[in-house]
Length: 182
Image 1 (cartoon, rainbow, N blue to C red):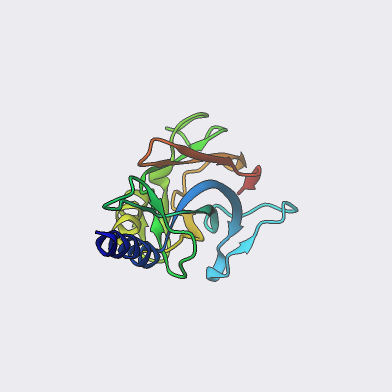
Image 2 (cartoon, helix red, strand yellow):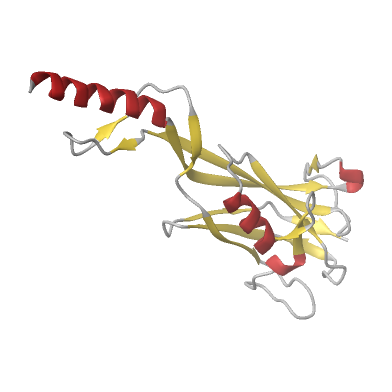
């Protein structure tokens, strides 16, 4: 009986150390950038950016979670010293880019303008990029870039709220700095 109990406990310890850690996104930070010739220079706020080269970078920040390991003898056991890392517990359900100023002839202040941005590396729409991110086995996402693809944007000051909706119903949100697009 004691041998079975010890074998069961050691099985939990070995199992939990093989499980690794999971991550949870806790906040995002947005940054405007100039994507001329794909250099992706951060916008310093000193001059205007051509709407042809404007982009938004969304940085993701996460915290490490202890892995929850169900055990045969213990209701809840947790891994505390594993070297492996695993993907986030969250998945992205949607990303909204909301304009705080009039955007173009059809979209005004407060409208979702996500359809006017693409992920530039794969040339995905935001919806397609979300599918790719959720299907791929990422340990952590550092950032995602979105390039403006609409030439009808009003030449004026613009500012955007970026909202990342997660599978656990949390919304990570940040507001870009104002930028003059010409």
